[in-house]
Amino acid sequence: MGAVLRLFWFYAGCMYARRRHVYFVMMGTCLVLFVSACAFVRLWSVPVAVGMCVVAMVIPPLAAIVANRRGPDDRWWDDDSGDPQSDAWWDELDGKRRRR
Image (cartoon, rainbow, N blue to C red; front, side):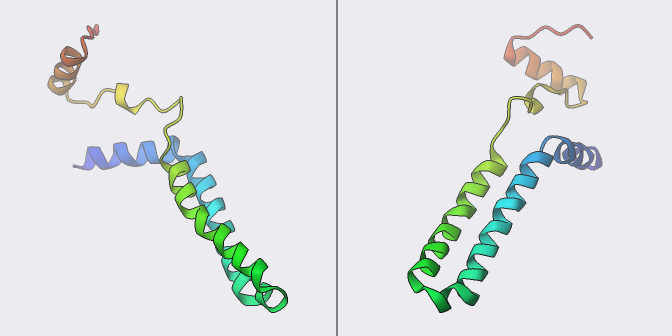
């Protein structure tokens, strides 16, 4: 179990750093839009505040899509798991012959 967690944190640190940053920027933008619309923009223009809330409502699903998108450099499915029997089994299923 510990090896799985270490592997997860290794990938979480390397592969997902850029996407994690983009996600937090998008969610921060969402919060700023929502809070500013409710706090002070509504005092000048209610339609603009409603528009800002609508834009803020659309950002979280887009942020989730961006955070879960797999990039061209994400090759986690090709990596060895560390268990030789499991790797041999998957190689046989995939039709691969690796030299060990």
